[in-house]
Amino acid sequence: EHEKQTLGFQAEVKQLLQLMIHSLYSNKEIFLRELISNASDAADKLRFEAINNASLFENDADLKIKVSFDKEARTITIADNGIGMTRDEAVLHLGTIAKSGTKEFFGKLSGDQQKDAAMIGQFGVGFYSGFIVADKITVESRRAGTSAAEGVRWESAGEGDFSVEAIDKADRGTSITLHLREGEDEFLSSWKLKSVIRTYSDHISLPILMQKEEWDEEKKAQVLKDELETVNQASALWARSKSDITPEQYEEFYKHVSHDFQAPLTYTHNRVEGRSEYTQLLFIPSRAPFDMWDRNKRGGIKLYVKRVFIMDDAEQLMPVYLRFVKGVIDSNDLPLNVSREILQESRDIKAIREGSTKRVLGMLEELANADEQEKKDKYATFWTEFGQVLKEGIGEDATNKERLAKLLRFASTHNDSDAQTVSLADYLSRAKEGQDKIYYVTADSYIAAKNSPHLEIFRKKGVEVLLLTDRVDEWMLSFLTDFEGKELASVAKGDLDLGKLEDEAEKKQHEATETEFKDLVEKMKTALADKAKDVRVTFRLTDSPACLVADENELSGNLVRMLKAAGQ
Ligand code: ADP
Ligand code: MG
Figure (tube, rainbow, N blue to C red):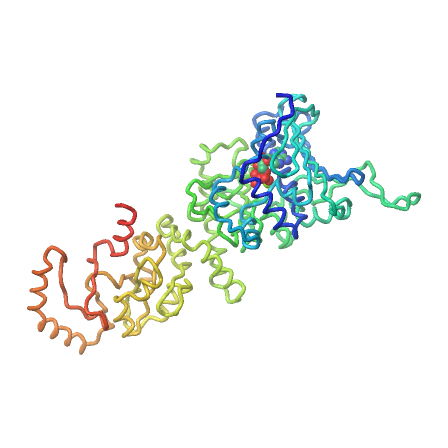
C-alpha cells in the first residue's frame, strides 16, 4: 500500500470538471475562496474533535492557513494545520462527490453550457474549482493523530484519473499546490492574491498568512521577506458588530456557509441576550436548492458554541418548514461537548429555535410588507422558490399560524395570471358588502381551477375566488379554516350558501324554482340512487347544466383524485 496507485474519478466528477473549467472561467479567482473555505472547515473539524482529545493538536493548537506562491515553479500553495486526510479519505473525498442528490443533479443538466453554468452554482463547486486555473494539483496531507509516516500525496491533472501514494509528512494538515495553466501568471503576485483573499475570504475566522513583501533598492523590485503577515481580519464574522460588516462581506460569508454560488436574498444578524444568550446570523437563499424535496436533507444551520464549531446539520435549530434557511448560531450557554442527544432535550435549543423562527418570519414580513419595489420583488422571488415549503408551516407550527397565514400568496380570479401574488388581506380588502367568507377552489392545475364550473356564480356576482393548485394546498387547508374571523370556504363543497350576497328577491325566486322542479329531482334521485348521494337544484351555475359537488364533510374531488393517483 506504499506504492503509487492510479484510480479513476467517479463519472460525475469528470462531468463536473469539464463543466466547471468551461463555464466558470470568467469567475476563475473563486478557486482561492473554495480552497481557503475547505482549510477553514478542516480547522473547525479539528477543534471539534480535540474537545475530547486534546492530543490531536500535537502541541500546535495555533490554527492557521498559509498562502504562498513560487514564481519559478509557477505554483500557488494553500496550506493548513487542520484535521488533514488519511489516504482513504483523500481517495473518497477528492475522487467522488458525496453530496446527496448528485445523480439527480447531473440528470438535470441539459448539455447547453449556458444553462448548465447557471445550475452548477447551486451545486457548489468546491475543491475541483482548482482545475479552472491549474493543469495539475498536488495535495499532501496527514490526518491529526496519525504518525508522520502516514501522510498521503494525491495528484491529478483533472482529466480521467488521480494517483495516491504514501509520503512522510512531519506536520499535520493539508497543503494543496496548484500548478498553474499557461496564461494564469497573474496569480503569481502578492498583490493579486491578497486582493482576492480580502474580497472573498476576509470573513474567515482563522488568520490567513502570507509572506511580507518589501521594495528592494538594490534589485529594484518587490522581494518576499521571511516574515509573515495576516491578510484578513481573522475574527468570526458573526461576532463582529453589524456596523463593521459590509454587505459584500455578508455575501461572501453566506457563500462560505451555504456552499451557494449566488448572493442571498436577505439576512438577519442579531445578538440575543436574556435567559439564553446566542448570536444568530441567518440567510434566505435566492434560489431553492435542487434537493429541497429530499427528505433526508439535513438542516442548513451551523452550530457553534463560544466560536467553536460543533456541527453543521443540527436539525433541532430550525423547524422543518424553514429548512431552506442557512447560517450560523453561536450559543454562549451550551456545553462544548454537546451531543445530538443532548440537543434533543435541551431547553436552550428550544429557546433558540423559537427565537430563530420568529426572526426568520420577521425577515419575511419585512419583505412582504415593504413599500419599496426592490423588497416586493424579493418577496415574490422568495414565494416562487420557497412558498410551497412555507405552507407546510400552517400545519406544523400552531404558534405562528397567524403570522404564516399573512405571508401566504395565491393566484386568484382577480388577476388573469397564474402568479401567486394575492394575500388573504388583499382578498378581504376587495370582499363584497356582506361577504363573510373567503372562497377558494382547488384543482391540479391553474387552467383547471380557472375553468371550474363552480366559479360561474361567483363571476356573475363579481366575487373573487382564490385558485389553489399546489400539492400541499389541500393538506394546508385542513389546518387553515379561517382568517381574521372569516371562514375559508370551498366553492365546490356542499350546499353553497352565498349568505348575505343573495338578496331577498333572489331567495324568493330560488324557493319557487325548487318547488317547481321537486318531482324531477325525485325522479333523478331514484335513477341515480347508487351513483349520487343526493340531487339538488342549484343556482351556482350560469352556463353549465350540472356539476358534481362534494359533501360538506367529505374529501373534495381534487383530494379524492390525488389519493387515487397515490394508489390509496
Ligand atoms: P465540500 O467543502 O462542499 O465538502 P469540496 O469539494 O470543497 O466540498 O471538498 C470535498 C471534501 O474534501 C471536503 O468535504 C473534505 O472532506 C475534503 N477536503 C478538502 N479540502 C480539505 C482540507 N484542506 N483539509 C481536509 N479535508 C479537506
Ligand atoms: Mg468546500
